[in-house]
Image (cartoon, rainbow, N blue to C red; front, top):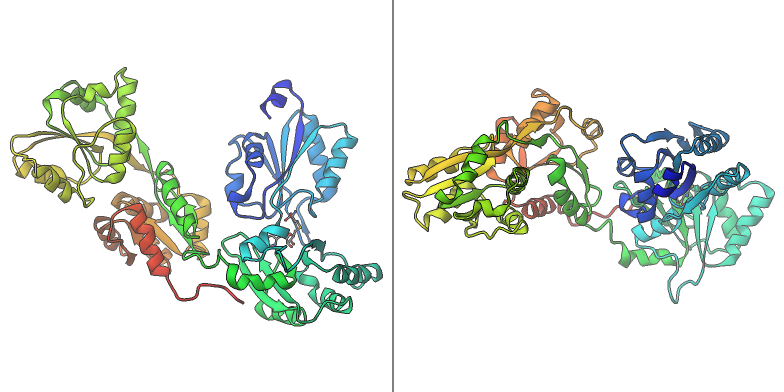
Length: 519
Ligand code: SAH
């Protein structure tokens, strides 16, 4: 992709973005999104994928939805031609696969007509993914050996179209219909007239692979009425055939404990990914809204000086993975490496900090069982603290519990900051919008400063009402106390103060005997 840019020739990539779950775009498709000069995207393309675009990329929305065309097909074609002719690398991003009812073929023909180069990057089509995420395989050994994908968009009352539906009914195999929810009343009688049994199982999968995925199961004779009664709206895929019954055993996504839950992650961008990934494992959709960012300390002088006398310390204590990272970066910046920390033994406040130390090549000599300052003191005290010199490397604005306690036990403690946490300039607009519209189920806070900064970011008087119907989860008791001080009702605090513990506590909180949507 880079080579075309270098040669100054424009090109259009017709890219399938997949059906919604941002994990379902292909590696090649994602690379196109990340490198394109211009992204021309459709209505159902998720924000997560668009966020991958270069910050200077031009994003053009062409929002084709039923009865609502931000740009006509001719205008879209013209944009693609114009941008490619200007020498731009264009990513034409479409839902599902570009050649499955995506008008990708028409756009490609237009480019051919103008002598402009293009490539097609296939995508995961909703025609297959909807079944996959609803626990319905489109083919199944011993049940069915073929499937047909049809559009329900054509006017089913037209003579030729009615014939086509009857022929499809006779073709046997699984029938998958896209864009058909609005046409059920017209399509279904033709399928029955074509020979499909009225009892044939039918599934409607709406918003497949999105957090709001819903599946409705019915039969051919009842589906139109059932769909109307349960208010199924597009986008939805209809699957007609005996394979639908497999869902009884194979529904997997809706059974995950946090399925459909949107969980706000307030950690820094750097730290969010671990929590977000774990939330996804349980079926939740993480919404990242960083409220703090990490910056270097106001001055490095105390750190640099402490490093120069490193050998005079008995203990070097890290209280976060950030502290480890930051200290190491500063050493590098000043032309040093970890050998400069030779001498003291090393303590870490918890397993993540210890792992971070380990990852940069530092062996950790002490790490308490419980991840609070009090336990760290206890861990070091076992080795005797009286008269010991301790260097504590941490955030500028942390609690003073550890140094106070260690000093009480006779230690000499130097507290040196290796980073500062500052509030973000502005809360993430999309996350805030979701909170305001009640689309967030839970919010997670991993530190007191994140609760405080969150409250300040959204407004101290607004934070209570905004989180009234949101489950507030705090990593540990100190964080929970800060949340309570700010007037929040904390519903979840884990027994174990780790990210894993937090997610498991959320799972327990939301556990209910039947989370499967059936209507
Ligand atoms: N090229 C797309 C289809 C475009 S036509 C693809 O390969 O998936 C638009 C139709 O696709 C919608 O009306 C709906 O029937 C279906 N569709 C697309 N995304 C969907 C989703 N996430 N869930 C259910 N149906 C979807």
